[in-house]
Length: 193
Image 1 (cartoon, rainbow, N blue to C red):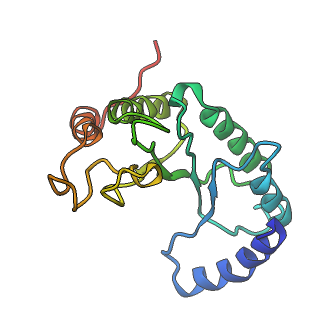
Image 2: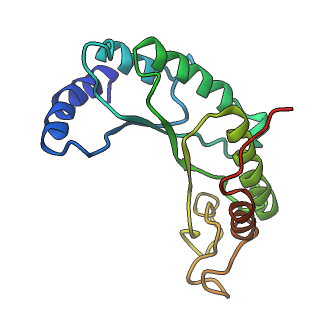
């Protein structure tokens, strides 16, 4: 939908929802990609249509889906795009809102996209780079399980297999990597040296 329509929807719903449910968090945008490059300037257009947050606030956080499909996290534009997103949020008075990657992952079909081993490696690298760049407040990995046993590229984002696989819901390398990464890195802080 056009940015102006989305801004009107936020202006109409946010005050009413916050009045009725003051503890509710309203996360806006949910764009495929970070939504700030010249070919996809949707978020800056929404912010422009909302106007300055110093007059009225219309969301509590920003949700993005920063897929890069075949590209390793350190070779993608994701973290540069997040810097631009932060710039626009600051410009319109939303510099204090968190940015959350509510879908992020790599399809591991081993043919068109990445291998299961690359998917596992990208998980760790994306999280380390996120800490370094202080980009996302949270990263929600997409998806827990593969969506089909066929190995179709778009259905292989899971960190565990499909229930119809030879080993139902079998752990893929990314699951083991995620478990180890989380065990080792929970509460760790990035130290720039």
